Image (cartoon, rainbow, N blue to C red; front, side, top):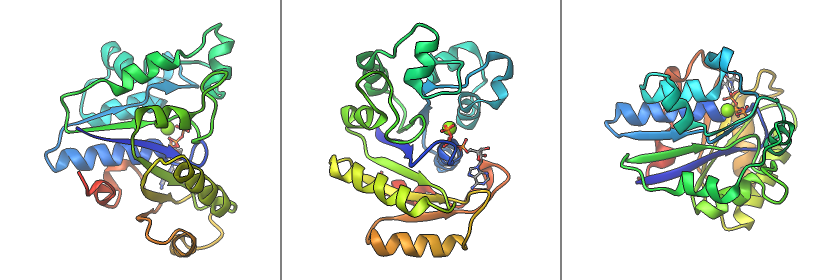
Length: 222
Ligand SMILES: Nc1ncnc2c1ncn2[C@@H]1O[C@H](COP(=O)(O)OP(=O)(O)OP(=O)(O)O)[C@@H](O)[C@H]1O
Ligand SMILES: [Mg+2]
């Protein structure tokens, strides 16, 4: 099984879109894919269609039922806050070891994709951040960033911090933000100048993940 952790430089950047598009494209190539969003904030049962969990189950081609919701997102919290704060609002705490066990288990699928939560340096509990989760799983990452004003510093800082912790970055997806001050290509070329040799794919604004450009070359080493 090949494994990739989809993380980002911040929240609401495009991780779910990338996870779903990649899941869909790999399935089109005949690969079986298990995609997980183990920790989710802002989760409401009554509007499940609006959640990452729903999108991801849908992209895998499964029926969205209670069993799949629990499998894909065991740690679901209502408050739209960082996971540590959202959990605390419910008198809970994410057990880090249980989280690693859930994600690290061997699965029969060809590919495992794990979507993180928020950016790579968001707290999960009192002592762990998403980056510690990635580190413990020993997984390469796909880094999703935006094209908004400020993304260059956020993206380079996140990339350097991951590499500084010996976490491989398989590639960067630049997902077009609602407001971009320059063409996507200019953002890509600038990032490429400072991060030479890093695989980068630009993802323009699209209506849904089925119309994404080919992202499978990010996982070409499969
Ligand atoms: N390239 C794009 N084209 C169209 N819509 C996009 C694009 N990138 C992001 N979006 C939209 O922006 C919103 C946030 O994206 P998404 O849910 O994928 O972010 P995320 O990083 O998974 O957020 P979270 O941290 O909440 O998990 C979604 O409505 C998504 O469809
Ligand atoms: Mg998401």
